Image (tube, rainbow, N blue to C red):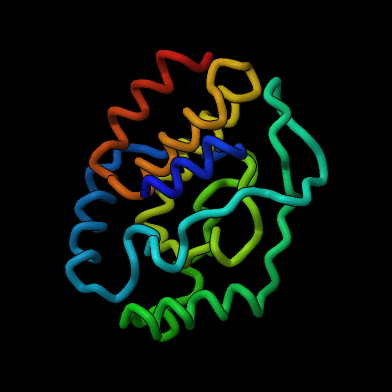
Length: 176
């Protein structure tokens, strides 16, 4: 984790949509977590995150490198297969419509399309975390948040779902 944060500090980090009350989703997530059929957080060994190295443009007052979305269907399938084999998940046996391949470091925060930045995220997880990404990127665009600050918040949200209410409050106080 320290290596991840250090690499972010040297280089450069958000996007989403609001959802309703998350108590039902959170309870569903906890039930799914017990089943162990899919990851509820990114596996750090396989998905430590990576930043855009060949940007299509620079964004925000900080001039954050931005890579356009470019993840092939075959790479998405490879990621799902690798998670299943490496961590004993059963994603390939589940409904593919229930998953997306998530950028651990969102593209709008300077994330890359590399496999090190991608993981299979179940809908019970992305309904909790996607809502924060757009607000964090808006904060970066306004100059209210640095990339490092936004990256820390999204990483905390994706690894520690219980922190999401606190993170939402921080964002609300900063981003207009």
